[in-house]
Length: 208
Figure 1 (cartoon, rainbow, N blue to C red):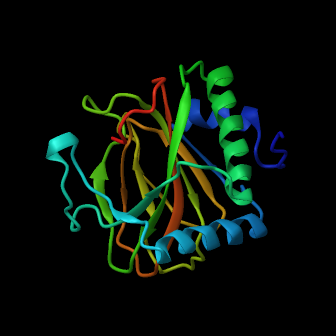
Figure 2 (figure 1 turned 135 degrees about the horizontal axis):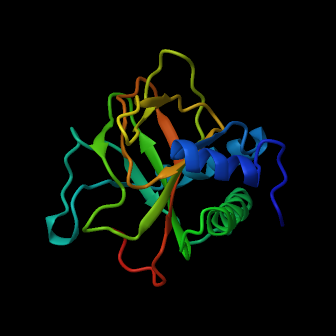
Figure 3 (figure 1 turned 90 degrees about the vertical axis):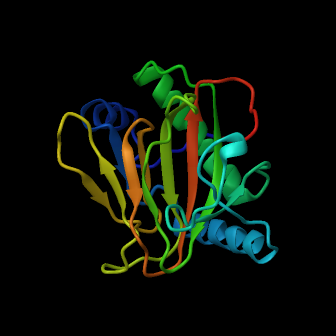
């Protein structure tokens, strides 16, 4: 299946990534798919399958809620119909990145994320010397959101350009260079998302 949405275009992706280091697609999924994904996320949450996200690597991993407050659920199977649709979407993004940006991406990994009221994730990068395999990062927002509820994604662009603050609007997809410093601002409402990283390694090792 090929995702065919009017605002999901190869040329737009390449141009935006090359010029801005990020790409934003509003209404990347339908309201029905959004509702199904949110239902699936809440199902796993209610079963106690979300775990506290940690910072650091290996034996140095630890939970510091003041720095990173989200709970996460790693996706091992994509058998839910809504997840299957997203899997096709990510396969198309992977093709976009390889064909248009000549990136050596080989696979992707995803988790559902939940930020409770009053939580955030301070400035960080997804690609660094201890985790060098993440090439592109993406976030698909699943929950309802209104102006003033905060929880924005802030991207700190390179070359001294101003930072960009992106609202977590429902059904919005954001893709950005994993080397960019970014943060999730403190949220005033529950914040649900599907976060994905496109990687240049082959074998899915322990989640980093």
